[in-house]
Image 1 (cartoon, helix red, strand yellow):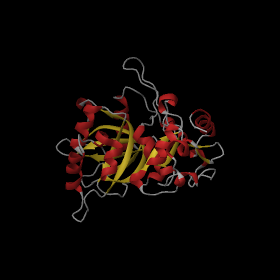
Image 2 (cartoon, helix red, strand yellow):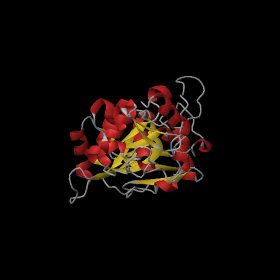
Image 3 (spheres, helix red, strand yellow):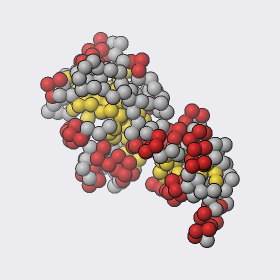
Image 4 (cartoon, one colour):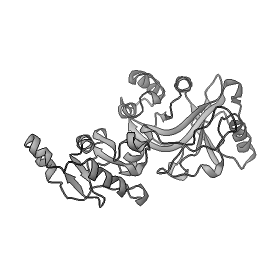
Length: 314
């Protein structure tokens, strides 16, 4: 099993260790990923190595996906999960680490991590084997090597849940997490998608374009749940559509829907209530403009049928 050890901002670590969110954004000022996200499985362990004066591995999480976002949008998506209490504080963390020619609020790299854990300081791992002092961003380890096994065994021994290699290669549409008990025998864990992870995964699945219009202005796009989370309780990518903000609102209240055969429907209620809607009606009965390339990430027909029958105002 491979896992990443990333050099971690100490302020970021300290802030998030107090918050205990279900997911976090391990950001970097560069938009270039430290490793190729396409070559690692969803759920890969991602460990946190503090900077001096500590120089210890002190926690970690489980890799979900990587995305490039302008700083203000990263704040909108993750908020305090960025490791700061405000967008101003977030900027103060990013800017000193960025190159001198960087534009304000430029793109940053975002590694989305689920189920972060923070080890008790007495369990921190100092001077991990195989780590060179000139490593700036991080290093990939393999648990089948001596040094990789040494680090992973020490981390795993201090977790309240057990992570086994054969439980980590899960895809982005079936990521689950079995809650661990504070007491008793540890159990296996897989990371659960949170709201921020859901938004990023849906955004990337739809190639950063609105499913209905093809609009690609990223700041105007939102991840919509087909069946509301309050009913489905699952941030499954197949329960999502990337929609322009106005279509998201119309979809949520049933003035827009998508049939199981991926046809757009516009409710006559728009015309009846507001004597308007020409820009919407021209899309009625048209196919979706954008779909995920991977068939397994496309919207679930059963959920689309539920929305069309139960929410859409026909």
